[in-house]
Length: 341
Ligand code: BGC
Image (tube, rainbow, N blue to C red; front, side, top):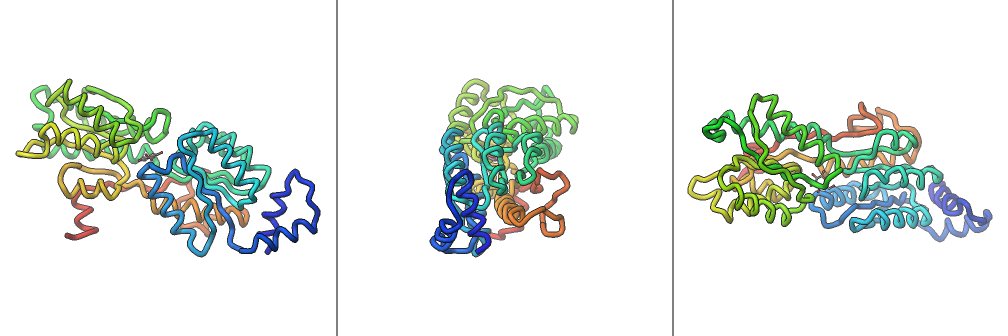
């Protein structure tokens, strides 16, 4: 009842309703479970749909989720946040369309005193620090980028012929959406890991395929047409784009008759795990959708009750207000071990 009253009071923020109205509305609202608005930048994104499913699962019996798909429009997302606030939600989990808009959303939410937990698209530190109930949950892109580079470096060590006569690794980089921290930093850190491993590099192409399989497939087909077998490896910021590249490579005769090329991605989606077993994807890095969804929901619930204490929370808080869920390298070996065939 207290929660319902709080919600009703927020609803009337800036309004004129009296106590009798609050009581009536509280009775009408009925259930006691907290209501959490969950907004995603694009419901069709494979990784994001896994995170949404995990939030939904984590919420069972603990919260009622109100999902909103912002269809890649920050303007629409702003309106959805405004509407959810007017509806009196108790907390918000936001996968921002444009991470630099976080400050705007934080300033919308702060007067209501409810938590806002961002996920996957990382707000700037100074923006999060404006409001004590603003947090971020996601993957540390420096770590996942580095692991991608290390996967390739290990492959090159085991298959030195990959470098060819010039002893240089000619690579293609498939980037996610420009400006997305996971695209920018995974790119930089995968290359850094290769350089740190002492591998000489030549970038043939670096392009954004916007996290999408079909765009990556089309772009990769173009690169194969231009560079042919000068391409010695493909580094992709996520699995979907890696799988698109693999389709283009297959169409050009790779992965049959012993012709192969190392391709790495990030996320460890189900489709990527299949590609690992098939032997087309060399490796990926776990972007833990389940833990991220779970952590975002638990964080939102805890922040609703007050200050966050390290004791209440099973995830690493050493970079508060950022909560990075650890990455893990995933290759065929790990898939076979976790899911023996
Ligand atoms: C994931 C991508 C996803 C993107 C969406 C990244 O962290 O690796 O698969 O498309 O987030 O923002």
